[in-house]
Picture (tube, rainbow, N blue to C red):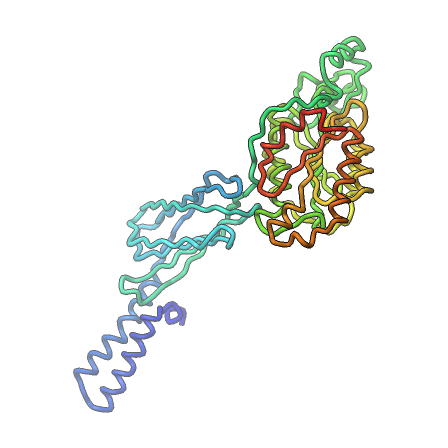
Length: 418
């Protein structure tokens, strides 16, 4: 029964034609037609028996190069098939499984694979959408040379392609106040105070053993390390507004996707300059990124989605509770006066605050809905901007179609803050 299920449409046609010829031969008494009918019926049956009873054993591996790409970039998928038996295979129809965002399913035909033979197949995938996309599983259909029978063998292994937001290279800008808690003065104060005055913490995997605080270790009975190396590291906070109602447009060119790309670009830029970042959204704290570890920020932003929150209160509270940030950068959508006032209070002496305000009116005009952006909304956006600049924030306006790299130099301009 399994063999009959493996018949292709061609194989079923042969079988049906053979049965019809057989009936005609019996009714008409034609012996020659009877021989032809038996031959036609026998071909798909014999092919089915051979294919289903042959114990093919195939091994498959998949390699993604690279496994992490930016939106719009290509990754090469390499499939490696190996025939681990002593029997050569017949025709192989290879198909890999892809989600719609990565393109159509790739299909390949391999004529024959000899005993212990190996074949490698390459194909390209890309996506304009962020996310984590499974690649696989692989399925192989084994067919007879006449195309009468196909038997599908499926593998279970899948790999994951991470598509991160687009990262725009930013020009170097000096942001004063970004080195809170650091500098030589901090180093000298620790050295003068001595080890006994340094507050130790528990050892974490990856900590330098040269930082072990032996007196605290002996007293606590567990491995303790000094904190001062951590405190010397520059810190900053990155707020991303993910509220659905605060953005306009759909797809890769929407204001939300531009905001995510801006947050990724800023995070990568500052991480390369040695800044440790906290990623915060309107829903609260999300992720901590050590300097030089921007890939973890990109992985987080690859899967971030719009929220149903109506205000920024949880994000502002997370920024306030974290403390110790010498630099605060906020990437914001629609902002009302009350939210602007809450953000303005985060700007303290010695703290540099930068706001990237998306010009939502330009997104409305780009989509042909400029009439829906009324004068009240426009006045509210200007009032929110004035509150931030009045509190010492450096405000950057980012309209639709503009590049963040073009407006980023304003982040280092103190005159952009009133």
